[in-house]
Length: 253
Image (cartoon, rainbow, N blue to C red; front, side, top):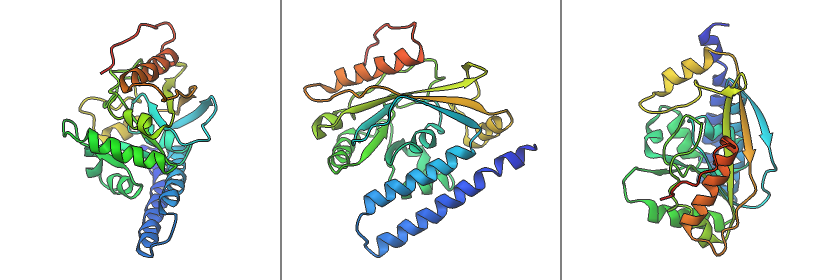
């Protein structure tokens, strides 16, 4: 199948996202109740539609949480968002650059995504916003590395935003994402360095489907923890699933 035909598979998912986003604008204009929950449910539908059209198959390992939690995951690609967003009604924290992406940036804004700038000194107000979201019964996903990796292990987990879980009294839900091709680490999946979205999409769709293993690990209680210890435990749990032979504890900021 030609590349452009493969890429065209994304269009129905994107169209659904646009329709749902416009409906959300209408609901907000009418001041209908339940806006936050409605946004989270519809975002999950959109993420599911997008994930099904990506060149991946999915294998879920573990049990999904039934209570609001702060989800933390290793970060390999922009695709991590729809891969995880299809599983539960989640709100996302993303780097500010995503807001400038054509269409996807607008859809991310309509989905209620919180944006953070590197070195922008925004972690304190963001932590408060995340805490409010968790206390109101919502779940939120953050990537504590603050950057993407090749998926073989994790970079430093920054614990500042994990303090929101402690303040809200909710658990942290660690998730390990493994992108595999032919049973080995997928070299095509990572979206790292100076990679751009369009070239990355073309590379993905030029190849057969790969496998994404989504490992939902045991939740980590936040009660009585400090943010650095919580980040260290989350990172160790994820690293153990990504590379079981490597159990060396790493320093966490």
